[in-house]
Image (cartoon, rainbow, N blue to C red; front, top):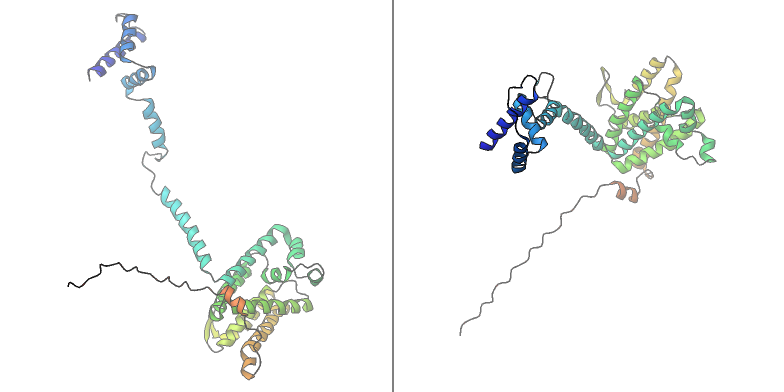
Amino acid sequence: MLRLVRNCCLLWLILLQSTPGSASVPKLPTAFVKNYSGKHDICDSAISDQVLFCRGGASRSKKKSSKKSSSKRTATGKKQVGAKSEEQAKSSALSDTLKKYKQILPLTRIYISMVGLTTLLGLVLGDELSQGLLALDPMRLLYGLEIWRPFTAASFLGPPSIGWLMSGYYLFEYGSSLERAYGTPQHLMFLLSQVALLSIFSVLFGMPFFGQSMITAMVHVLSRALPKQKVKWIIFTVPYWTLPYGLMLSDVLQAQNAAAAVPHVLGILAGHFYHFHKFVWPKVGGEDWLVAPGFVVNMLTPKASTPKPVVTKRKKGRKLTAKK
C-alpha cells in the first residue's frame, strides 16, 4: 500500500512538471529518480499504466479487454442474444436433413441421388450437351459400350419445375412403398427389369428418357396389389387401380398434347409385365424367374447382429477334506 502511495506521489509530481505553467513546482533531482527507479524496478510500461490510471483510470490491458468484450456486445452495449442459438439452429437443421436422407431406404435413396445428379448435370452442361451425354443412344450403348445411358435415361426428369417436384415426390413415395413391401433385393430385380424393358420400348418409340415411365410402372405394380383400396390423389379420393391413369390424364391436360400419354402407357405395360410374371404366372404353374438370386439377397439383406455369449469364469474354491 505504501509503495502504491509513493508511486502515485512521484507520478503526480512528474505530471505537474510536464504540464505548461507549472514552473512553481520544484523539480525532482535526477539522481533521486534514478535511485528510486533502480531500487523499485519501475519499468516504462508500469509507469505508462499508472499515468493512464491517474488521468482517467484507463490502461492498455483494459483497452484490450474492452475490445474483446465489445465484439460480443451490440451497439447499445448489451450482450448479443441468440448468436450461438442461430448457429446451432443452422447446424441442427443440416444434421436433421442428413439424418432424414440416411433414413430413406437404400435403393430409393440411390435413385433419388441419381435424379439430383442428372438434373445438376443438365443445368451445368445445357440441353444439347446433356442430351448427348445422358440420353439413351442405342448405337453408343452397343458399339461404344456406354453402359451408363439406360440408367441416366431412367433418372433424368427434366429441368427443375413444378412437374419435376411432383415426379420426385412420386418417386420417393411409391418407390419407398414398393421397396418396403417387397424388400430391397426384390426391388432391385424390379428396377433392373423395368430399365431393360423400357430401354427397348424407348428405342422403338424414339424416346431419349423414360424416367416418367419408371414412376408409372411403380404406381401400377402397387395398384395391382391393392386395386380397390381408396387413396387420395390431389383433392380426389380414387381407387388405387385408377391412379396410373390419373397421372397420365394430368400430364396430357398440362401438356395439351396426347403424345404426353405415351410414357405412361409404356410404364403401365412394363409394370404389368413384371406383375404378371411375378405374381400371376407362378400361380398357374409357371416358374418365377424374377426372384432375386441368393447372392443378391445375402448382399442386400442386413444381417442381424447376434449378441456374443457371456462366459462367466467359476471361482476356484477350497476343497473340503473329511476329518479322520
